[in-house]
Image 1 (cartoon, rainbow, N blue to C red):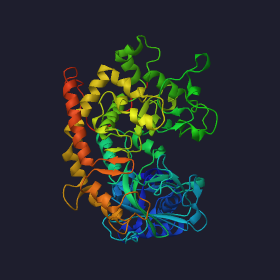
Image 2 (cartoon, rainbow, N blue to C red):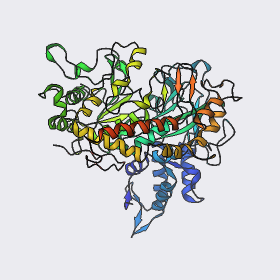
Image 3 (cartoon, helix red, strand yellow):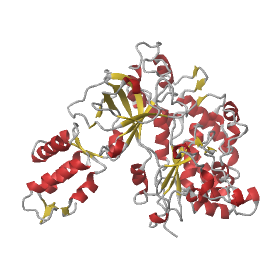
Length: 586
């Protein structure tokens, strides 16, 4: 701990944390926190806003009457002062983003929300008298809406907005929700987060697929969103179990890229220029600059939607994205398609993106059979241009991209097209996409995903990718590893975490869920606990463990045939589960 601390330093120390005042031991430290919370708080049990931390600093300064110059003395002659002890006490009971998502389940409760705004497809601001509250709960609680315990409400705010989210599931009976905690600039962040994503898991009867997918990404050193579960209620009316997942935003970027958190973040969709294939685009006069990757019109209808630096004319040209697309498509390299299997192509790609992290994403994605992303669609992913370490301000002229995954409910054996994703070719991804494209009205017989196909055409990239796939099969992606997460015994694992809240969505085993969930409790039980195969309308849902067994075995068979040309371990890579540090500037 530093010897002194000014008000800006205290804000920097706590701005990504929430101090849970009720967890403080009795004494002056807790008394000050309570006084500040009562004077500046928003009706919850935490200190978390800039106004609260400013008031906390002032209160500590008043208590240290000998302190001059608007600075707290934390240590005097090597010993903690009262102010220093207070800061340590507050840090002990503060939760950051990781600790927030470590808790297994939350209650998210909205009161005073108008009944005619329960299906908002555009953000709706909270009206006067409305309030959003969040508190910790026990996943096994038998009440649909457990009241706050002794700890109290962790987060409460009258200033927020709500909107339904999703593409394929936007208008389904049980909708997903996005909460904006900073509507109209309100000081409402929770452990640094400005958004809460509550995903309805509408397509997943087991209610566990997203959790399993994100765990695999995290174990693979791919930037992964933190996540938990929540029970959502409006005026104590239970809306069901939801997957609570971190937003990919500036706070997420700061967590994963440190000081390089001010670059360009693109979200990929199917919009103004089609789906986000990352194919090279050339306009009139041979122009292949950034202007080719969007059309005039509403910015929120762009295929590659810029989520940061939108108003910065020096950064919002899309020229960095155009440079990335040129590199991954081998533009300017001689040799036609043969150029992809050259050192020049590999070096060009490595110079503009974290290729190993992308290849590790690819290994996870093809194993879990997630098709609604940069596989069949392609959409539902992010690209982040952080620039290089030591040259963050030069990210436009010297781009360096990282691929960020998103949206994993359609995974582990969920299919609507008659495709057996567990048997997909490890190298030829587009070969599995014909039925998907046909059903979605595409004239293409194969998905166009050059970031996958071009990189896997390179011997070195392919070797690394196959070695990582085998590492996953050995460690995290096999029937035992997945069963251990779901819960090998009654009362353990993910199943125990989700089943109580899921069952509370219906009044009988075979009756419809009153929350709009498309699966009965019996189907949830068969899919989640028994790991049974389900047919539900057009959906064919494999049991998760059975899917993993089939995918694991077929991947082993494919690897055995490929190992003659790509010997096990020949890449020399060690898979530590940690993402590479950003390269230095050149």
